[in-house]
Length: 290
Ligand SMILES: Nc1ncnc2c1ncn2[C@@H]1O[C@H](COP(=O)(O)OP(=O)(O)O)[C@@H](O)[C@H]1O
Ligand SMILES: [Mg+2]
Image 1: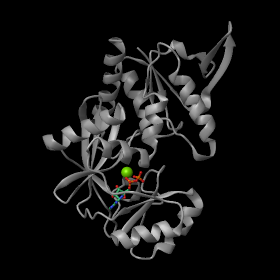
Image 2: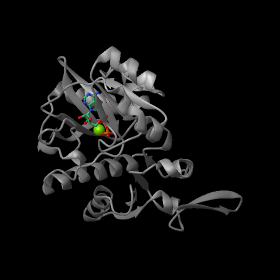
Image 3: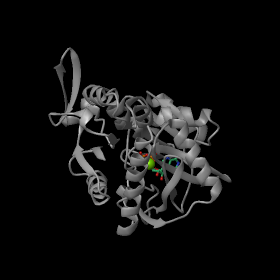
């Protein structure tokens, strides 16, 4: 089968790894990014090209697309053009993929489905952040479009510290700080099943469970109730390869966010192969039956 791997960029570990594992499993794999997507007219129809080749040459595209703040319109346009190519499924198409980019939309859709999520306020001014702080005490502020724990800050009454984030993003999210000293659980769903999971333990003195913020991951098998919740969350958002950040709080599993470009580089090597294989095999199986 001919797989297109729409990578985060040319260097990202998981993007490269997916292409390598696809080849090891006997498939053809083309790694490209949104920068490689162009269009040409072909007999009155717009043909979408990937590295100057017709997209229709591919059987399926696995997306780890990076939608960049500074190129948002162009990136969104290209992802949509690709998603519209007949006969070449994109996992996942632009509409679902873009909705999952936004933490705010994630909170809306998951909350509506009855999945526990943190109370969340969208703040466009310091007054809003102050109101959140007065309401919840210790709060966390973060961009709606972010990753890797970047610009996720904890405030304890000092709501002025949110000013640079407001200046940078215009709108930021405020949530009560939900302590999880033992870290969080990253549950990765592929299709209708949990494919791999690990706990992420924050670095000493830290509180964010992102590996990019120094957390380390340890193998973990989620109990059935958590597996069921994670699959339900992924299906609610229509994300095929979904990384759920989950904490245990107040006797509940609370979903902090859904990631549409989840990673596995913190796993031991054999587990990494297994993780990528699960994704490739799902894409192949579900494309063949279309
Ligand atoms: N409301 C919150 N209460 C406590 N910790 C939080 C809260 N929101 C986020 N965190 C911590 O910060 C980390 C990063 O937040 P997250 O919302 O997952 O954004 P990112 O996309 O940057 O990973 C989480 O893994 C968690 O450890
Ligand atoms: Mg996260």
